[in-house]
Structure formats: C-alpha cells, structure tokens
Image 1 (cartoon, helix red, strand yellow):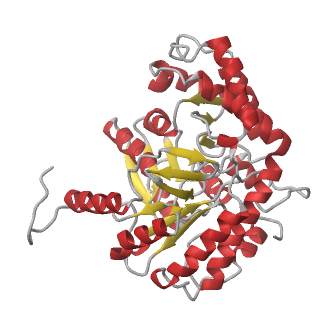
Image 2 (cartoon, rainbow, N blue to C red):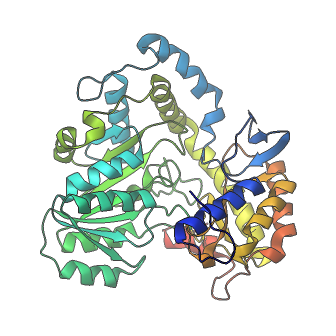
Length: 432
C-alpha cells in the first residue's frame, strides 16, 4: 500500500492503516509474545501483566487441563486428518453429548471456529430469505450476513436494543422459516447482554429464528438459581439458559476459545437443523479437523467446569467488580453495566490512544486497544479482560494504573449510576 504524504486527503483504508501503524509503534498492537509466566507475558525484554487474554476461567494455565493432552494425542495422534464428513474421532460426539446436556439444548454440532460458523451457518439458515442484524453485532456476524446476501438473502439492520425498530422491520416482510435475527449474546466491546428473552418472544411472534453469538458469555454466565455463588449464575451454560429460555426458535453459537481456552466452536440447535448443516455447512464437509490437543482440553475443561467452575466464576466476578467499583470511584466511564469480565474504557480524546498505550506499557499493563474505525470515534479507548488466573496483586497494579491515567479517561456519564453492577444483578433476578 502506498501511503500518501503531505495534506492529501486520506481514504478510510489509508487512515486505518496509519492508525494501526501508530498503535503497533506504541507497543500494544501486533506484538510478538516471547514468554508466558502465569498472567504475565514478556514482549522483548519487558514483562507485562496480561489484560488482553480472553482465557476467562484461567484454564489455559490449569495443570489438570494440560495433563489431559498427552493421553489423547497418544491415542489419536496430533491431527486425525479427516473432514467431519468422512469421519469424526470419538472425541467429537463425546463433546457434543456433554455440551448438549450442559446447555440444555436439543442438540449440538461442533466445528472449528465461530468465524467459520457465521460464514457457513447464517447463509444455510437464511437461504434467500431475510436477515435482521443488530447494528452492533460482531464483525464476523456481519461478514456471514454479507456472504448470505451474496447468495440471495436480503439483509436489514436494526438499532441495538431497539425492539420497536426490529418489530417494524419484521412486520414489513412475510413470516417464514427463512427470517433470521442475528445478535451478540454478550457484546464483545460493551460487555453487556442482549435481552434474549424479549428478542426470542418478538421473533416467535413473527415466525423468525433468533441467532445468538455468545462467544463471550459461554463459560461465564449461566442459569440462575438460589444456590448460585455470584450474579453470573450457575454452570456457565450461556445466555439462553441465563435468561431462562428454551431453545424454541433459537440457534445459539458459541466457542471454547475464550472461557475454555481451546480451539473449538459449536452450534446449539434442533437435531433437524444439525442434520441440515451436516450437508450444507462447508466447515463440516471440507475443513480439516480440530487438533487432538484442543479436543482433549475441551473435555478436560468440561470436567473442571462441573467440579469447580462456579467457584472460578465467583472469584472472577469478585475481581471484575474490584475494577468496576474503582472506575466508579474515579468517576470514569465504562459502558459495562453487566459485570461480565470485559471492561471497555473510552478516552476523553480519541487522538490520545497511542500516547495512552505507551503509558499503559510504562505501567506494565498489556490490554486490548479499541481504535477507530473498529469502534466509533467517541468510543475509542481500550478493553480490559479479567481472568480467574489474575492475582489480587496484579489487580492492585491495574487499579493504580487506572488512577494515574484517569485524567485521560472519559468521565462517567451523569446518567450512569455508580452502582450499576448491583442494578444488573437485580434486573437478572437476584441481588448482588
């Protein structure tokens, strides 16, 4: 790419290129990680606390999960090289059976990645019908919808959280099995949950299917109950169960790459949909398999979740709340009113992102940057991901860093209450 110089007007692509180049130069973008020690990472000669990892339950560092790899690799080899159409190691149906039970779903199909699922499953479900996509849905959902549009579907966008707008759009098309409403479960930037209960009711009224990507919710939020240890709920069995819904007219997509620290994804759906996808979804028909090591760590992770997953989530909630309460005390804005462990912090001035990135590194913090055009200009900032493997000492360092950076961070909106975490817990059925 040729980068213009001088005062030449920049195209959006060139502007994005320059933005990314500046962030890489600042040291928090496109870096090579040289070493890992718990939740500390080494980049070159510098050791940093890693708040960019999405290994929410800390299973990437769990000895029980690591030890499971050797046995299965010696049994199956490193990479049984069949597409699933030709043959599946027994590990696949074992995972699907356990996942179906955990989710309370009618059936499940596991495939390599969520991105592949969106590109293949959304077109397979929509056909030449209508797709309604949340305006803030993840880019990979959008890519799947664009692909479906190229194959004959009509795509509409509805405003996030605006059920009235979605209802208006649904009323304008004939009801039928090929009407698909696509949304995130837990939004990957704000950390907030879609109102799956209301969305599912609206979709049922109009004969549409609700398609939910809960990449960041699966393994964290789950069914509510009197014996839950924290407002995330129990079992980490994702947003559909968290809102107390059945899977009638709902297709749930999720992955093991975040909370379970393993390369695998799934579609939870009726058996009839699963059988259709086995002849219509290219990742099932043609993709190489997931490595044996990942299948082994998924099964081991499910064992850990059954025994101590709720305790891990309770500690994760406690640590996340420490950060959110500190932001409240600093009067710093975050859109996170859900209490889930990804916390976006916007800046006062978007142009300050490279300098803020350098200051974060100076304080030993490695975070996920949120530059324009990845987010709107008024949301440029950074994202913190909490994991169960963080220590309280590391959180103390993070809180001190946030205090030092507070003048560069956006002040809390006057209409955002300080105790938003308690309000979220009460809205979802139980006090904090």
